[in-house]
Length: 301
Image (cartoon, rainbow, N blue to C red; front, side):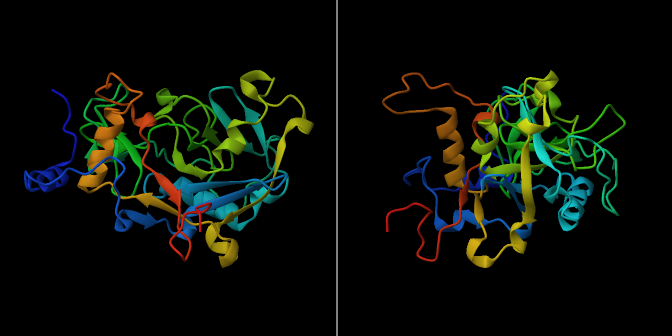
């Protein structure tokens, strides 16, 4: 039988809606549905040339590895000598120390315990069909895509997912070497690598880079690498230039309608609804926070 669309609390909420009420449209969202991500959960990488890539950290899913990332940020480890040194077509862009000789800062654990999944099921909304790589796929209340089974859950490897590069097990990686998925979701990596975050802005600056010509997409020469100028928590940046982002809450009937809309496209272009969707094709929305006038960046004033 197909997995229920929603977790029990949200399903009960929908069932309590009067039959005569107009159901929400997939695009409907109230201002209260958007929640600002804390500034100390956003990492801003500035690349040579001035472009930035912003990542939301996932401390609830890989706390030890995220703690390492915070220590690396505090030590300004990525500010000198680090670069994007691997770009493999339809797979990942990877950054860190290409020489593998730069020592880790004090306090950084070289290989924490594996954090590839966590016990429980915190999804408040689910897709209607089983996931090819998991018993179910859905969404946490705080805007993360999830996959899971009867006993555990994890953040799936989708476009923009940030994982910790590692050597062969039992190594789990320190977090100094990170990668972002820039191609079709390599879901076979699920539960094999620690996920520490998700790119929420600037993924195009990684996905559009020249492909590496060495093995596995590594750049063949140092000159091809893209240096990282700085890496900072958004909370460390001046308030006037600090990027702020919001995720959309998933524990309400408006998001339930969004799921239905993603599973069953209905407009003049789509003549045959699919009846389902891959979690990587229905990632929970993230947007830049509105300015003081309530306008999204780039909106007409």
